[in-house]
Length: 280
Ligand SMILES: [Zn+2]
Image 1 (cartoon, protein in one colour):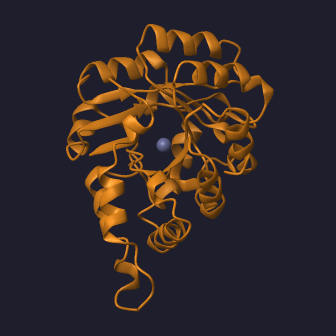
Image 2: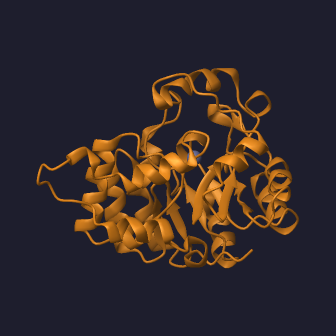
């Protein structure tokens, strides 16, 4: 099993104090977002390979250096795959990116347009997108809502990435969290573009929304574009697997349509890394 979405950071070093406080909203109760290597590896026990990244977004108070992620990955290189993070509003972002790819051996990129406060279609990002397209580097974008009050929702709407997909037909993209709560918009985008995927991370704990999203995905026949991820430390590994397996529990024997067992198995067994062209 593969996990395409997880985080590492040291909150004391890499988060602004207000950001740590606001994170309590993410699950509705205080959450310890500290990531210790041993705890992380325990949580990742169900998975053979795990993509891990931090976040860079000056606007909302996150700054996890790529070196930190690279050191973390180096402790379990057979299992962990590091992605570089890019905040294109910052002057050194392109040099940091090429350094992370060339020297830290990162195999993809994570960007958070709403967190860093940029429209993903902004021409200032073109250099990053062209570089990623030319070098076969997938970009995982945060899409959907957040707990940070200063992160504009307008920059996380999935439809923005339709324009990007048209402009960069060779750029592999993953839209995180199926764009929740704009999931229908996200499914419409991934349906159009063979090179655009979505991940199911951090959705299972809103069971009604998750069930409906999966049913819509099934009706649009786009479940083959859904990649498995957890969003650790916001959600745990085995709980995320069980959450997907139990997606139909909420409807009980009501007669409502069910997410097929085959669809669930396929998502859990998907070789996302090969689909994205990532080889360790
Ligand atoms: Zn995440």
